[in-house]
Amino acid sequence: MTHGVESRKISGQTMNVAIDRYPDECPICHTSVYPLFLEVTTYLDRPRRVQSVFRCTKQDCGQLFIGTYSHTESKSFTLKKVEPLYPHPQTFPPQIQDISPMFVEVYSQAIAAEAASLFQLTGIGLWKALEFLVKDFAISQKPEQEDEIKSTFLGRCIDTFIDDKKIKRTAKLVTWLGNDETHYLRRWEDKDIDDLKVLIKLTINWIENYLLTEQYAKDMIGNGDSV
Image 1 (cartoon, rainbow, N blue to C red):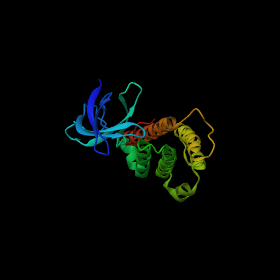
Image 2: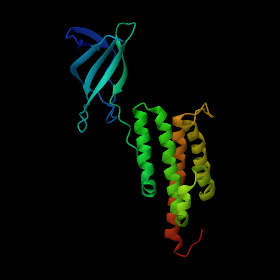
Image 3: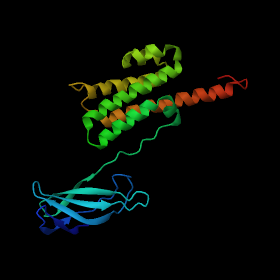
Image 4: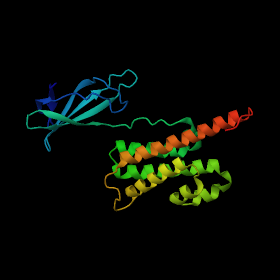
């Protein structure tokens, strides 16, 4: 539904323009809302754009954000982006948070870079996050080799210190694809950051499954059973 709004140029001159729609999601809390339009609209000549200020109508958010509209041939302005764009909150299984808090921190920062459209940095951050996850997991399994694990290159670390085949396989795939994010030439042209995030998620899942299985086995085998 098109909305007619009054806009103001930097010179102070006002004019009426039509915007195609209001944003339907708050970029800060990521809630689907019908935001409150505030009577603050700026018209920019080069290129022809309109910026409108909105307020999130979710009670425990209520923050302001800006919608930027670009001029179209139909003489209306089309919503192009909404700012500031906060990353979606990242949640991880308790086992992952306990074993590698640095993974959680680095991964969250990489996703924040993605939200800020810093895509060249996102892949590098995701690759670094995996290194913390893999090495912290390996240290938890082989604490007597901690110093060697820390100083070993990631690929060799996976080959040498990760015994579970599923974890080893997905972690290696992440390193291969992560190398594309750190090198000049890409090897897998048909894969991108979304694929990298999927592979990291698979690695997280396999590590969580492994740790849960080991914990239940430890708790239950003491009853005289064997598996």
